[in-house]
Amino acid sequence: MVKVGRQTYARLMEVYIEVVFLNNFIFCFLLLFLTQKILRRQCSFLRKILSSVVATVLTILLPLVALPASVSVVVRLCIGIIMQLIAFKEKKAKGLMLNFFVFCLTTAVLGGLCFGLMYFITGSFDVALSGSGFPIPIWALFIFLGVFIVIILQIIEAIYRKKKTNEFIFQIELSEGKNNVKANAFLDSGNSLSDPESGKPVMVVNLKIFQKLFAVPFEKVIAGKVSESEISGAKYINFSTLNSTGKILIAPVQKLTICYGKEKSIHQNLLIGLSLLSKFSEGCSALLSPEFF
Image 1 (cartoon, one colour):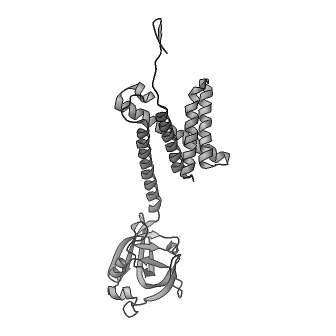
Image 2 (cartoon, one colour):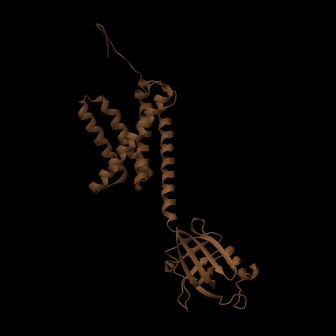
Image 3 (cartoon, one colour):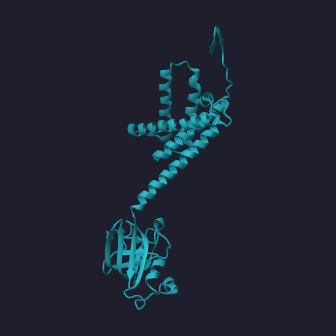
């Protein structure tokens, strides 16, 4: 109702229930998806659908009941908790409250971005607040912003993962006679390969590094016919992984230098093993054993 002077006018707005349902459903689904993504929770697609449908129906029915504003806020918060219970089946109060907190935070971020983008495009506070008259369907705007947030989360996760991975990557230098090779090596906690006779740990390297240290014909390497006469101290030992077993060529190397920022550690008379893989974890050319640290 709008009062002008002594006259009172009614402001009417035509609302299509299917549009309201679609907008609310997509918004609720995106909130659950983002909450799941941020907290790495297990949640099936069907549970997100069911939770979103229940929340959408309750949200549409809520304005039909004359409730005080404070009660309406409490009811909406309860709807959010119901969504968490349906979607994530969280039984512990601590986990439920964490889910709900992230859900509310995501709601504020997504809603704020939606409002800001609508106001930026139209320049109208009323359009941004109600969505009426906006040239783009609200549900499409929700999807666009949801995809945008997911991309941002993926970038942040990739940067964090790269930072953590870099803690296990070291610059190394191998020396054998006049041959020196520099490369990046990955510290593999699962690399327990060692020489059964001497007990020395074995650092695994790719073919490119191996051939820079030892002038051995590629055909003999592939055929597994490298002898001790060609590389002093070379031999084949058995190895096993979760997926395979076999033999690996190992050979002694005079020196290994591992760089820790500005610090270095030097290992003399170590063993390296040849892998036909071109790259290992994170594009490194060698795998370090924890025994070198």
